[in-house]
Length: 140
Image 1 (cartoon, rainbow, N blue to C red):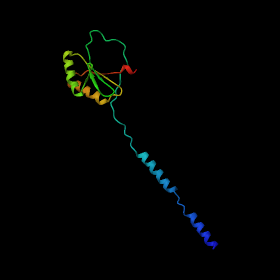
Image 2: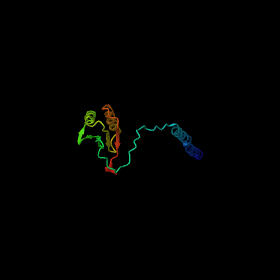
Image 3: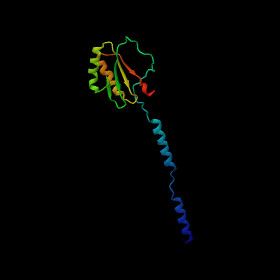
Image 4: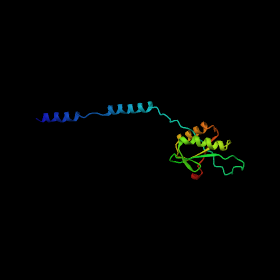
């Protein structure tokens, strides 16, 4: 009878599952996926904001058309809020009053680039090709 008990004990000890080969396969697969993964860099528009200039403009300088974009993507012209579809008409009107005027877009740092592009496109459609991006002086 004692012989049977020994056999049962030996059988129970041999019943363990060795997980080492499975872990080896998992780590090899992990290394394979890391090496073969392709990292895509998102394409964006590089905007270089000019440094702050303390010099006042000359007195005979033409008045510029100022378009402001807030952090919430609201567009402001002449102290009033303007829809993006009305920007072209406003630029055409102001350009007719002062043909040498250029468009200056004063965009908040949190404003989306799409608004800047839409305003620049509207200025080009209104035949104003001198478009500049002004830095936000308040945040400096």
